Length: 314
Image 1 (tube, rainbow, N blue to C red):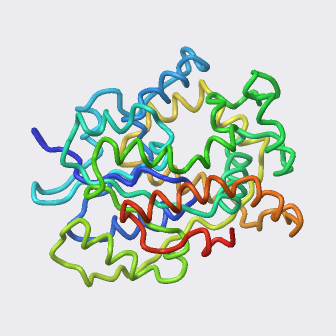
Image 2: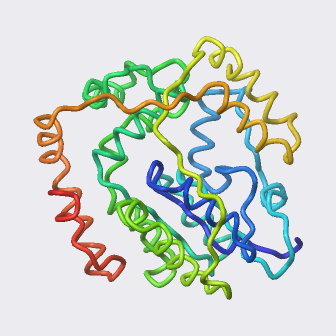
């Protein structure tokens, strides 16, 4: 492992197909993906913010490059891949990744803003980071939360609740293209994943220059819409001191099993709450400048050759 570097990173966006891509890549014989998703090593600003809010209860799965690379196991000729969709919002992750490996390739998956925010809000409820179950009400709380009010007790990184910030797509993507250039960055549309998962997978494999392009995994995994059950128990198990103890004392090899057990206990499949057509139309007007800006940027730079404003109905 000495001298090895991570070659490929899926850096964002959350709730935009990263779990599907994670499992597709993990099954490929030429690619090494850690059993633990979202190690959160390169987003140093995120970790500082967490430490500021959590104090002694803060922990990192990897606080040094040596610890980080221990998550990757495989022969020297394999491509090392890190899937961490939270990197997209980090100011410092692009430079930190570049410092680690200037030749790294970057993958970014993008989803229509309202669909993304609804799914992300639902995930935050499950994680007990968000405590406002009404999606529209949660969006309206952003201004007060930026002022330090109405922040849930278990939210240790308030920017997660700044929903309009999350869909400033061009700004987040440009941080990576400014550092790595356009040739080393690939954009995947969530719509393309849902339309033709195999085609997207093979395009990613070509981007990585693997030898086996036509490899088809036997098992497909998707992160379906889910809600939290046994919230009282989860609030106990994932209290900061207990969560820190669990993560720092669980052997790395058992972490995927622990995550699977947690999902079996606390997850229940459930569709996201209904949002009216009128409200969707209102939100589309709000986020239309973001979409138009992104559409122009991606097509002008050749990162996408599809009219996403038209695709998303803007």
